Image 1 (tube, rainbow over the protein chains, first blue to last red):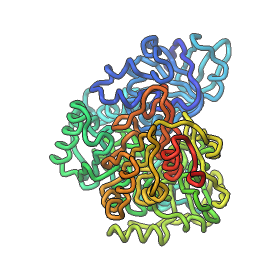
Image 2 (image 1 turned 90 degrees about the vertical axis):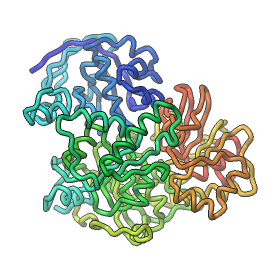
Image 3 (image 1 turned 180 degrees about the vertical axis):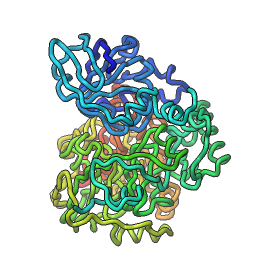
Image 4 (image 1 turned 60 degrees about the vertical axis):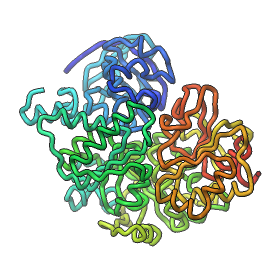
Length: 164
Length: 415
């Protein structure tokens, strides 16, 4: 199973899609143009500070609100390796998987973690932090297939024997 | 074991006799709604496919409402892309007809259908006994190309309604009360099913308002039993049901709530979460800069009648911009016919064309730093309607109108 270590950014409950990407920036043509404004209503500078491979840890209901797919797309474009939350809103969950952004549900980590600390994730197995292990529930095979391919469209291409 | 309405519709759409909560089913979609929030992106993604193909163009309905009329060159380009694609591919297309969910209710939704909409408030269609659910543009694209998708059969929360709403209390107050009770993710991945004697006393406008807002509790869909009120609406709009489903007596629910409508009071959702609800009186005296009557939640003729009745013979507070936005051309026309628009205009309101307006914070009426809006819109998230340091309160058409007159949050009975 894939294993990775990353620096953690901590967020609270109900991180909604208007916080992940405010409406006024949806008019931009590319996700790259939207990137600097991710999470800006909550933390104006976080998009600048996020580094590729970083991990977001949040509370309940991450991604609630709009169906705007730019929300998970911009999180992925910022290089966020995965989002770990107590729970995810359902439209965001589907949109994230469809864009190859890994989401992990865990009820406890958010309460223990300190921003800036590092954690190690073994996909479909566990999270390690501060000498403690947090188990992860396995994703169904069909979702793993989509994540592996980097998103739903790419997974369909693979399944149909087409190149990327 | 019996089935809920959600289970029955998914069973129908997946060609199964029986399905139960937590099954994963491949379903055939009946309708696919998309608006100008994301259709241009869907077009780009479609054009990047190796074998682009639309399974059945007659099932697609595309509606321009989020930024109508276009407010910038960038938006105009998005609209042109959407419009050209719809025309080239024989997709039903509306521009200027109204807010997508209201147009769908007036012209397309039929009981028993399973509908994907590239918009979170697609759950509104449950007011006509249809399973509507919001998806992103990749799920939409997949459904558009294949005609199918996968769904996790949701568990259902059942709401048994009894009694009647008191005078001055509206469906909007009821659904805000429910969201406050179960929280912003209390129905995550679940269906919310409404029924009982009390439902009969709620008109279609109220029912749409209730179902529409269920996504703010995280719901996958909202569903109501189809009764005479729903059938009358359907017939008046020239349509027939696909199939009317009622839940089985032994259907299994994740939780059952009994709600006596007579206990509901006027409610306000405070910034910055829809479940941050308080009795309206706890927000009395809050200064407002803008008020908004409209949206897929409360822009119907019934809401306009409520607002106009309160506003008649009064004036909008000079320090308040009061935006009045019909949810559709039909609502606009009817409001004109009944003289309601004249009442709003003479009182100093700003009457706009049907669109999503400030509800989504990009069309018009966007609020500035430190400003406060009271709105019948769908959300009050931080920055939702403008500057990141602005404030949105959600309330019924009556409370919004009364507040626009007073210049601070109040209810109509206190004017």
